[in-house]
View 1: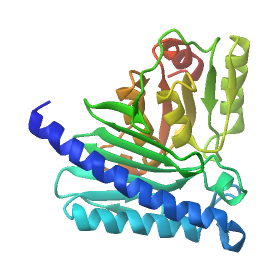
View 2: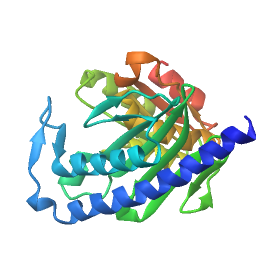
View 3: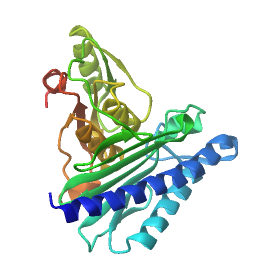
Length: 266
């Protein structure tokens, strides 16, 4: 990587951190008065959206348009604006809307940056915990400024694996994975936010995370964090229209990669 590219990533990383803080503050304000929000269901009753999601995504998009008008933007609520710069921001204004509207703190703001098909910046703000996860290609990962490095001695048997589920796949797919994980001596959690659980992998709180179907806005920031903290992730398809479609997501620390790939059959 050239120093010019690294400088470009670093500047955009600082920008993403600033935007994530602003977006997190706005989202937290909505969270603290969530009883006033109008909640809508999408295709599935468990898949919900509120005015908070839309307002936070609008704020992020406006900030990007002002600072980097030639960059593309893909967001969960308002779709894709094509890039003319080679950079595309991929954002989830509130990942974990179900925990959010039900008064649980396990939600986050996720901002990723794609360049040449790779997630080169990943920033996740978890306002309820006052935590900011941040990473950029070649620059490492940090949590509130403290460097993150995954412990390679942790495995599925001595640590916890995160698991995600949604209506896009048959329940049996997730059930089979959980059964296999438990059979191998592992255990799991699901907190309702895939992006936040990926950040937990980077922070060493989870040894890995698996979800059989996720979108780019849910996983790319977390993927950047995991890679920069010394972990591995299953590449997400980002070519053309595939960027807007879902795909399996798997990320892990060094000591859990092979076990989780086997269990997930990936």
